[in-house]
Length: 164
Image 1: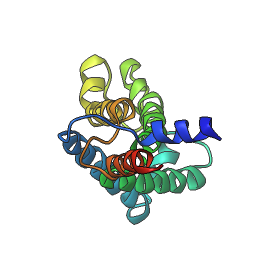
Image 2: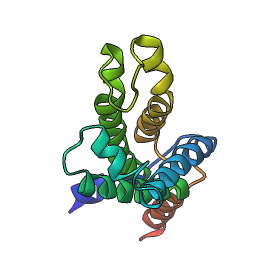
Image 3: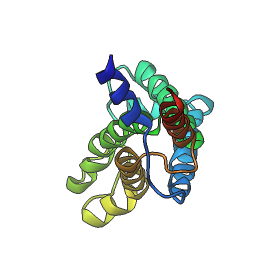
């Protein structure tokens, strides 16, 4: 039981500066809005795009991805369970880069007809790379002191100190 509590505490513990809120706002807002767009514009951003990229069962995976982006984006925005929410978003961005952007390097990207090489790859993958780096950063440092995670940690520490 004690091991579980330690694991839970490490999940929300953060000593990162409050300025981390800026990264959380950027990363969370982008994921949340992209998740919503998968439902509002399914042909352009959801199942249609997934199918065009060659992802099997696009009608299943696009909405699933949208739900993850909405839920994890919202958690990141409010600063709750940020490390946990960052994990699927790191996987999400790695998948997006590998499936849709990496083929640009050798000129075989169905979503980016006529684009090939390093510079086209760098240009088209800039947002995915920024989201990957932002998610990896949040996974590493946590939500920062201006977050619900920090409040939970402070509350737990106060409780532990005041308990007889």
